[in-house]
Amino acid sequence: MKRVTHLFIGASIGLLYCNAPELCIFYVGASVTGAYLPDFDLHYRHRKLLHNIFAVFLFTFISWMVLKEINLGIIPDENIIWKSFALGYLSHLLLDILTPRGVFILYPFSNKPLSAGIFKSNSFLANALFILASITIILWRTYELIGEKLFSTILGPLL
Image (cartoon, rainbow, N blue to C red; front, side, top):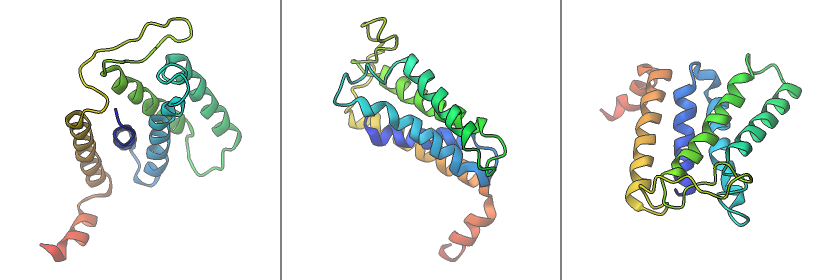
């Protein structure tokens, strides 16, 4: 899938996981970071080095350790951040599993890709559908979290 698709999916996952509007920026930031990180291996062993379950555990552990050390007291429970990060990372792998190339989920112990082969990663239709679904989730959750009041304030003069 395209990077922008991973970013939209990550944002929608962060909002789905968020239950307190004032903390959503942390949820979304962590899940978008997790959704984007696997593509840092784009020019070196792409879909192997960072597209495996061991990388998910490693980077989630690192994010947990960093958050534990720099707890600024802003977030009541830093566990929400590393969990959002992990969900974003896993969403990236799951989307790439849908492509013919798949991901090397057990790399470096196996060079066999896991692939459903449903969509090509550059498919306009597949990327557009995932982005539209993400936008729908983002709008729905934003409305649900912030409430009708904000939308009526913004859209009231237009209606």
